[in-house]
Image (cartoon, rainbow, N blue to C red; front, side, top):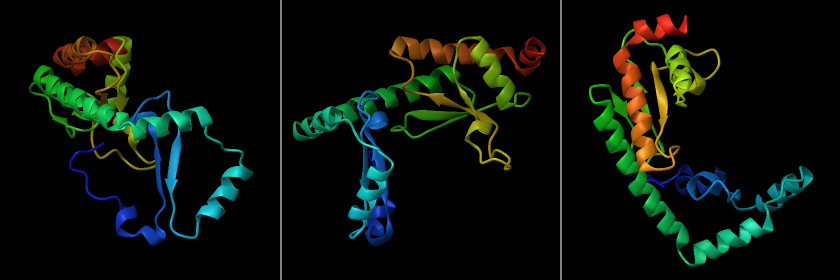
Length: 188
């Protein structure tokens, strides 16, 4: 969905790259259709593997996707999604103020770097106690490796409305303002 995306590896080395995608995140969770672009000569082998494992897309979903591509609904959905996440990343940066936020304006998530004293596990737990779902950096780290950041992943599209997103970011700000010491005291 990135407006300034670099070409995928499949465009640079199509003879040895499988490009796998899904509509569930980019269009709608209700449209669970996956797609694979394969190098020349691999389609029949992939079809055999898919049928062997009894993996089939719903034909209703395939037809819905075909209709949406034909009438360009997909492009309109992407434009609306880009506008929504741009609004939400701006909102997150405004509300969370002095705390470091990183994220692309076309991405469905952003990273909040936690201030000294917080670790991602305790912050995630405290946030969940407030009814806020965030993902700690350890959840996005390969087993056995140390996380490259102490932070949490913020959903920019999870809240159903801009008002709900505002409340989401406001609750995070209040938790950050209370500080790690109070959070750890409550958590302990």
